[in-house]
Image 1 (cartoon, rainbow, N blue to C red):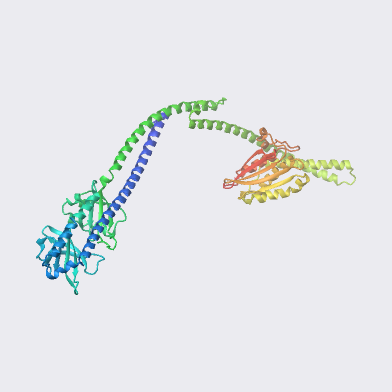
Image 2: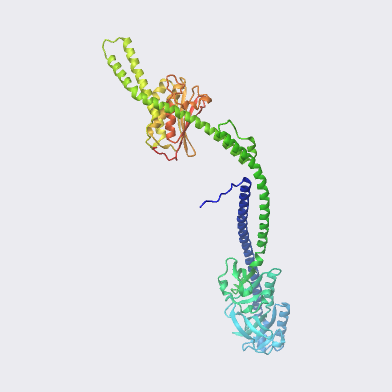
Length: 599
């Protein structure tokens, strides 16, 4: 089955697609992250606000009940309360209770005093006098009060169930109690506190007793049916909520609610009733600003896509022409023409970098060409080494042996002995030349093991110390690299340092200086060998590693070639710079973390 041919994509289309995907992807990602971050931040802020509001309102409720408790504590011990003994015959106690109720405004619905049997003796409202004590429901002791001193509960009145405080009236002239004091509270004060806390907002407030049953609610919630029969124990209010959370609000007629809770902490000596106050806010209302922000971000994304399309179209036009020029340059360069990239390609920085990359590619190809020439020279060296190994070494051995036999003749004169010495020294020199040719053409495989480069350098300097002393050259050691352990062939590196230090000693003047230094640079180990000789001109620094190139009298020009080969086998680099004294400085870089092999 043949594949359908796909036409190439132009730069304009590619940029349009790329920018569209980039802007869309970045916009969606940033928008989603921003949305959830803002939502979380808004929820945390609303949570703190709900909890703070719940705590403030509940503290006000605690203050309200604390003040009422202080009132009944004070009134129960007043002397006028003793009129219960005489059934308040002069109505002094009733007038006092009426004055108390009037003085506290709408805080109390009524104040009552009964005898032990529960008959109302005195009251702020005369309609209560003579009646039997109110029907009591769900009385419980107020925390922090003396045993059976103050209790809170509900009583049945003509207007329905009313919250009330009840306390005993002690007998000031004997033991025991004379009767009871009832303070029928105005629950509207509590409701007003809840209404004020949520006024002007879509929030609601619920006051729950210790069993989780609703005992008060803000205005909007009071209008819902059966609000006071609602139990919210499943919201874990008895445990106290550490932070606001989202709760299903079906019980209150909402889909979901953000709920903040506060537990009664009491006020001064009053420890509170253990009630909870819930501040609620519909999630839809709480997060409405976030949804407005989301739609705004969508509109901004669409606008950004439009602008990105215009920009990409113009940018593609600016990039396409320089790329076409570079393409033409590549074709002409492949044909061998002397060309360089058009300068117009540098109008955009990225395309300028591409232009520079092409220039560097040309330079790299030129260097490759030089390396090919060098490889050709090494091939010639290999051929010469093969010929000399077979055709020269055997005659050299015969000549040397013959010269040695002649030197042992007893009747030789000084002239003859000098000539036999010349023969042996020259055969040794030719033999060394053959050895170097063989080493250059076919170096032995390295034996890589961990070695201390400082120890190798020190060993080489010890070997050449006498030669340096003969020439009166001072050898300086600056081996300061912290990490000098290198996986290498010790004998080959000794050969490298011997060649380089011998060259430095040769070119250093009498009384001169040669220095070898090491340092760490990143993950590399740098070795520098410098002298104060005449130095190497910049135009010759690359040629010094070519076979048979030498500036040394009597040299054959293979020593530095072998040095470069060994360094490259060790995955290193070698280059020549100027020393601090104006002479030559050979630098070698070894990668301490490279994986070497015997190949």
